[in-house]
Image 1: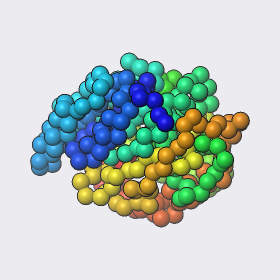
Image 2 (image 1 turned 30 degrees about the vertical axis):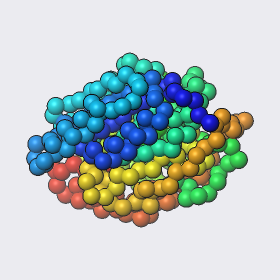
Image 3 (image 1 turned 60 degrees about the vertical axis):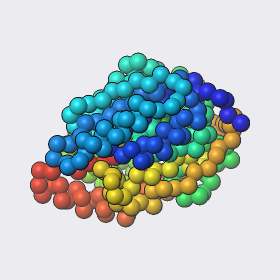
Length: 313
């Protein structure tokens, strides 16, 4: 069903989990990409035995049996999630125009790669589209008769993008005060006051450095430029990294370990580019909804009481 070789480079972000990393490498080995870029953070000096786990994970990359050029970018010191991912992707997009990105706990169905490849080519020059995601958090609801739909939510548990989009990433959220004080979140979020309150708290904590997350910075960059994300009509990637051993995803989530399905290739394309408002409302209410919001607010309250930093993917 699929081509024997993928013509798009893949980026793998690793850290200290050889077991989950091996699962992702097994998935990548099925498609033999043109290049494999590997980004790795250094161990935290205050965490016992972390250096050994980092070394063991990097050894998997050194010994990997994939027919492609492997290019690594490893930090000797711990940069933290936000700086390591953002600096690593800056490095990648200095070299290539487009890439598929996976973290060490995001295991895709093989069709995910060819879905990304086809859509990276289809929307290469369409500035309305900023991201191709493999995630579907609609809990089994079919939102379209086509292979995918359009969303404002740029889920990043297996995704792809172009240099033209990533160049707008701003690790410092420099224009957040303008967006916040001008009430622009109300326009972005369809006048949903609960959603505005939730995202205002998130972005403020990221801006102040109290949440260590590159993903929220990326969401913000897409939103302020009105960039749309392509989401598949079925889930293509499973995050197996929640629970013990994780650095940032310690709590259980209804989105953890979701089953994956195969998407028929070639894709069935919609004849329009219109955001699915109902699907987005469901995502806000469930994936970012009351239960999730309450947990995050509790964490935000905790970090506001001290100088520690909350790290979130």
